[in-house]
Amino acid sequence: MFKALVNAIKIPDLRRKIVFTLAMLVFFRLISHIPVPMVNSDALRQIMGQNQLFGLLDLVSGGALVNFSIAAMGVYPYITATIVMQLLQPIIPALEELSKQGEQGQQKINKWSYWITIPLAALQGFGQVTLLSRSGAFQEGFQFSLFDPQYMLPSFSILASMIAGTMVLIWVGDLITEQGIGNGLSMIIFGGIVSRLPDMLGGMVTGASTTTTGILGISLFLVIALLTIVGIVLIQEGRRELRVQYSRRVRGTKLYGGGSTTLPLRVNMAGMIPLIFAQSFMVFPGTVASYLKPIEGTDEATWTFIQRIAQWTYNFFNSENYAYWIILFFMVIGFTYFYTIIVFSQTNMADNLRKSGGFIPGYRPGPQTERLLNNIVTRLTLLGSLFLGVVAVLPFFVQKLTAVPNLTLSATSLLILVGVAVDTMKQLESQLLIRRYEGFL
Image (cartoon, rainbow, N blue to C red; front, side):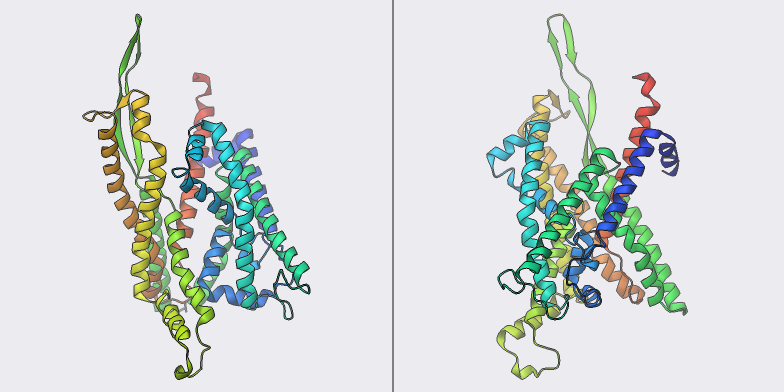
């Protein structure tokens, strides 16, 4: 891997791509430090450490929410828009027809995704700023409101700047994809997570005392983190390869086609999407309940019915509750199956094989091949979903096992870091392979 990186730096074209990618990441980090007006930084950091929902949003924003910058929403609205477009393709015939038109159809779908991003960003920004405003993240005397004449103009400027920041990040991501190395949107999230690693490691060392227990806890954490990274690489790169045979065709006096190839089916087709969906669903009830539960110290006899339900919900959807781990585990499995079915059904793999004259030996083209592929994907998804479920609950297990405060191991962060790093190195190696064998083409 490091040899491929050194060889890439020696090639002027690849060196330019690497430098351009690093420059765009630096530009992204500069944007993420431009705060919106009227924010109270000290109060915001305290809120970020206490609220799980804001911690998740800070992850998908690439670490920009902790400063409440103009890039606080990150590229999450665009990711949501692309997921919505994927889910709508099997439902809306016009979108499904566009998806079959190759690059031209995909460009139209991407264009619609950009337009959908704007209202989604406005909706998410409004909810995000409203929650932070009620939590006391703004300066004293300011209240976020788009309808109060006294606060209308600054509130609108805050919301508009956040939408503009999101669109600028999408533009930066597209530039990285076109002129740099790796997937631009993934690289932005990757850069945000990497920028927070020094603070995480510093908090881990500070939280652990110099006693034997603290040192053993950190050592155990590092061992589990290393094993998790190895497991992620194995599962992400794991594939089931099926042999595909192509029939020969005779046209006149010439023979066309024939030969065989392999059809790779990934163990984890859903990537990190199930983890984000499951964590969002698990965090949301507790976040809503935190605003409805009674104030600490009040007499329980004075609680209303809604306050009692809110207090129970807040306690139940707590990451320290073992039931929370179990529900999160099964939700990850469910979302993995759901998203994999959606993605795999859009490929129309069995139909495409039939049209191209390919078949799997021992199985007829058409429905029989489709049933075979569905059965194989179902079994592969079971393995992938179980692994994702274990990775999702692993941070809570590690925290309990090591008993070291400030010790966190975000499953989503690890998946992003490992996945983006592996994909980027694959692109570099493929570029090197093209240039090394250029004379043989």
